[in-house]
Length: 322
Image (cartoon, rainbow, N blue to C red; front, top):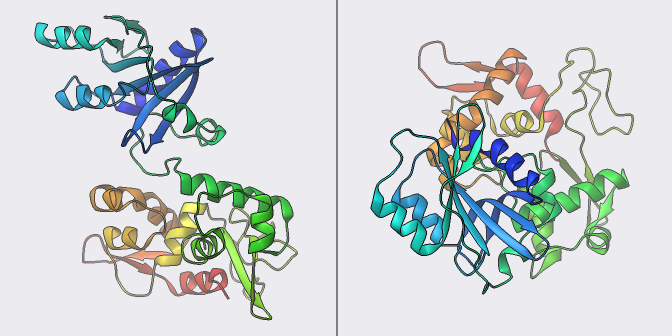
């Protein structure tokens, strides 16, 4: 049972008890990210999940003392339980234990003790984006809700709703950001890291941005946008639909052979730790999809080497920024 498999049963168990559930919440003041944060009125609780009981799990749980009123650890059920000294540590620090069976049943062993004195930093880190991101607690594939991601989500939503070119000033008039110098920082982020969904143009020395609907068809597709966001010069050749992740991988591929890890290093917004530990896993599915669509190919002899096909080069050119 993976960590993320524990999430749905825990979420249901908490909601049945009147808690609102927020997965993967980062709190910089605490120096970490909680697998699950739950709230009920002014009360805040944290659940840290692992595949087995370990010192790392206890350390993660103890991090939230002073930030949460209740702390739990959640692990898959094991017949042999855990040692007595662990039970003493959990009891002394007031940490509750949630067991999850392979059938999704949740029960407690050791009640979480109410801790009255807490600081509000964890609750202040909660946003609606945590509930709408689709990420589960225990997820380890990136895409976490961070201050940067919250800012970009706001900008993406605004540009998608606007449906036309907008200047940085117009964007900032409608979107609050986490940047100390928002004009320069946001422009740089959109130019360098968000090309997969955001296109730009320059008129009279001024930058403008608009939402690029990456779920619509590529050149020649029946869902092609009439506003020209997708060039029509290859209309007779290509009819392909890409997800946002597939497009991101397409944009960093070249006609030279590359390994999945090297490809992952070029992807914008991907945490370096994820790149080095799970980068190949992150790009494998998009690569398979691109190969199936005829946009990428695998080296016939050398294992784990990929590049664009001639068709892939043409399609990528259509999506590169002007």
